[in-house]
Image (cartoon, rainbow, N blue to C red; front, side, top):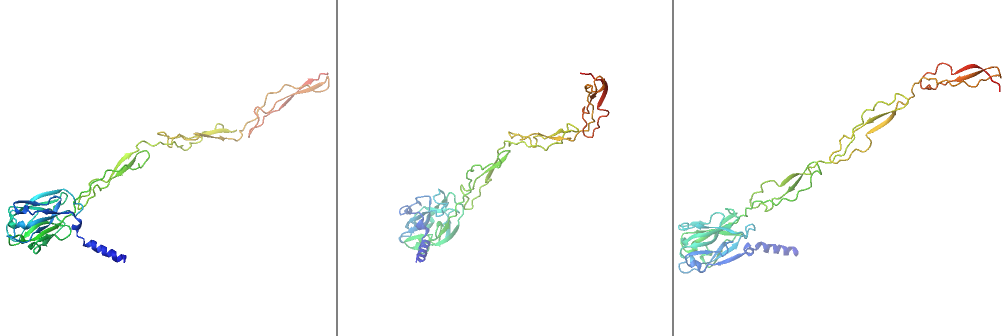
Length: 362
């Protein structure tokens, strides 16, 4: 049931003519076409879609045209645009038989100028207008046959949706009913060239220091191109350098150099090696290297080969033996100056000397 209702609603909407949506006015020409002069739409942003004539009478002159249907542009890009107008010269266009009188390409009728209210050839000019951004061309045109409708009272108009009058066709006589066709044309979409928006803010820099790049962008949407209009010229992106100041560089140690010569050839010495804070050196506020620039280690810890050397002789000691008899006393030395070490040689000679002496009695 709901589906049937929806289909019915869609069919009703499709049958609605754009004229029911368009803003149309009826131009009152009951008096203006009775004499020389212009009969035009009251609003120059509207365009003729049809003409109304009264019942046949008298010599069936132009004065029977009493009203014009003036409608606004149906294409949204043309709606409410100020009009560009020109007067089409029809002074000789309708003098012959079976002839057209037309507006310039891209223009639509807004009214007519007559030199007399009697004959069709008295339509000497047409006011032809177009929305100011409309091209000098039509989207589509066709001939509306008004042969029958213009023979009697009532409206004769462009029946297709969104079409407007751009000219008239006259057959073989000068009576008003010899207007037998309207040239009806549809407006093109307005030619709108694309325009750039303002650039947005710059994005984040690609580097925090040492020189980076950042970019900002814009879009071709102010307005977007339409109706065959040109795309925006130029670049959608803009770049600039940023954060050009040099980066802080923390110092880094070089490799250690070679070990220096040991301070001793034996018996335990010290040797050192060094490094520098140059890989890289600190720069632009960077930190110095952490740690020591020199390291040491023991070397040649083996004992030295030292030959023993005698110390000085001591004083002779007490004389020892029997009272009042001859005795002996001794003096000594040690192999400690220096003492033998490693593969050094011992001292040569004796470590003790004796000497005869007389023992004193107590």
